[in-house]
Length: 247
Image (cartoon, rainbow, N blue to C red; front, side, top):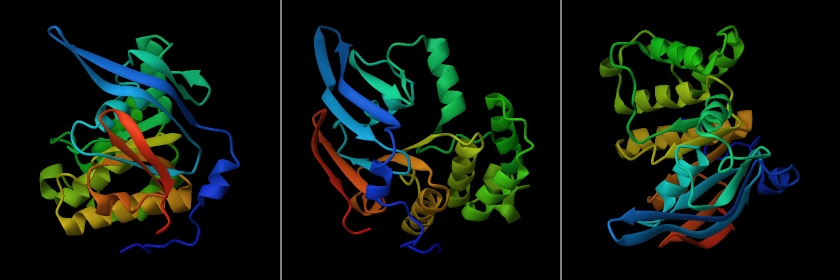
């Protein structure tokens, strides 16, 4: 298991000396359900700097999943803006938003979403092709596989892998294009406690060794403890934003 307190981790102070990677400004999302307007997000604002591992916590209905989908360019907000690496995701076209996501944002979902007829390596190579990666950066791929402990499982189909191994393949797939931001949507929701700990350890190690910026949502306080900063949400609003003093 990976070192739970890696010495090479980027500290919150280190991260704040760099320009912001994500700036969320007065973000509001309203869903129409017949005649009823549901305010999923209500004037949300925060900033994320490169190298941070931010965890967004809250119970079901708090707005955290809607927020993550907007950060990933999968949804367009009702109002407000998300400035990602200098570009407003809410202001660009759907085509431009898709291009930004494919090039700069990796997403890991609760469901692994692996292609069942492709091996672990096949899933990675397909992701490279979709994102336009030339596949020649073998050193980067080897480093990812080392960190995720997948070297010996590359030629196995998803059904031949444990749940934890499938999620690690999903993490590797999200990182093949060297994204500036990794979004993780309840990545341990389908895992037992042992595999959940392994995946969380590896996310933290990716953040520590590769300085990968991570935003993860979870309802689990134990999972939240792996981040360097914790944002708490309730009823579509941020109620707390604090560094994780346990790191």
